[in-house]
Amino acid sequence: MKVFEIKLKVFLLKDIHKTEVQERVTDFIDGTLALNKDMLLLHEDKQRYKLYSYGGLQNIEKSGLYSSGNIYNIIIRTVDQKLARYLYSFLPKYQNHIMKGLIADIHILPKRILERIYTQTPVIIKNNSGYWRDCLSFEEYEQRIKINLIKKYRQFCAKNMEDTIPFYTSIQIDNKKPIAVTYKGIKLLGDKLTLYIADDTMSQELAYFALGVGLGEMNSRGFSFVKGYYEQIF
Image (cartoon, rainbow, N blue to C red; front, side):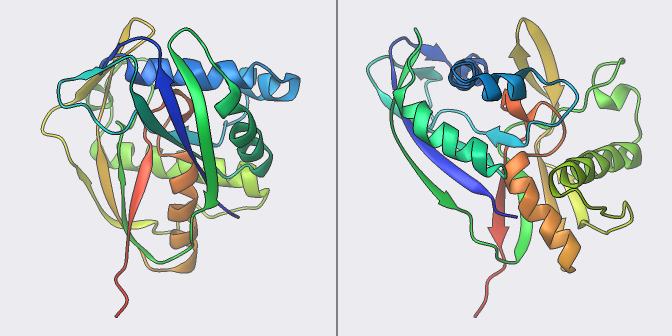
């Protein structure tokens, strides 16, 4: 298993407020996928996990306004080599009314011992009662996150991984109150998390996998993009 990382430069054709960034980046990637029949089928398949994730626009604008005429970076990750090659080839050629692709580079994230991982964008857990705190205990919430990731791993690797693996030794919520993100006119509440990863082989494998596919749900909508801290080796 390899995690592919694509760094894309885009040129903004219109201003984007920080509250719109996630949806605008999602639209841009979706538009690129729609150019190819196989990629469109992947995008529209509701039965399988998409196995890619991405962050927002970088560098962060402290004013909250990403201005037209400026160049920003988008980082996209996936464990799907075919998808990685497609996005690397076609994202720089794509343009919609908001942004224009410029150049991209691609590399494989190195496999090293992960001390901890954290989410750059909020983790979303969907249920009929809204925000998870209204219907789940923290233990149930933790279990949902781990089992969701294991299901993605099983889909991709076509092999079993036991639900009982440790995965992490501790978990913390990094925000003091829920983070609200507006997506398609709906306000979703999520949390940014830090997970301290267990040092056994399978837990480390799962954490590396998370760097590519994200935690929780709606990763192909820009939620739960994961970054990592590596153990210092002296």
